[in-house]
Image (cartoon, rainbow, N blue to C red; front, side):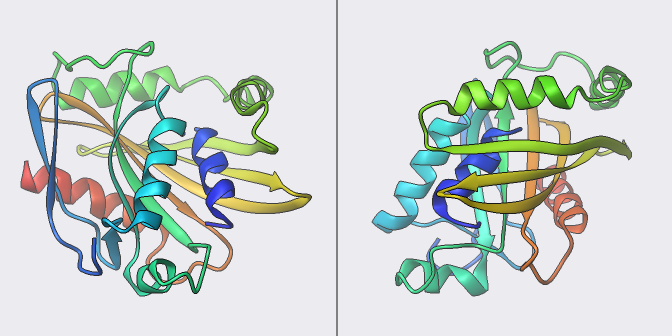
Length: 220
């Protein structure tokens, strides 16, 4: 993340203790078993980690409920110790809202993916996306603009989209690339998001998103 604030701004444009341990998250009477993808660890219980998670929860409230946030295991200890303020990449799982409300999915995963894909058949209106983002972020001292977004296809597991963002705060701009994956797990509408900065190394955003989706489906 270019900074804690930039990370949150980037997330809004769409919205552990050092070991990649499994966890659970419950909502609408359903429980998700969550396992970070390879190379990632979940934010833990230190004040610094929880502050970041709570900020992200508030920032993503219009999009959905934040079930899990994961960051590179190799960077987490340094972040907890205050040696770095930025993550080079991160990912999260959301239980997404429909028209601002959490609801269970009553159709099959295949139908859900097909409907999601059909709903993005038209080109993304970048001007409208950027207008909504600016409105959402008014008063935060930062700006975000989406410079590109497009569907990249569907599998039996999920529908995928890719995009690019530019965040700016305190006069400093930072590019981000993201992959989003929409699927259904235990009747819950799930959105997996993976963000990477130019400094990111290791698995690509698409590889991470695919692994995250596969993990969710295999454990639930």
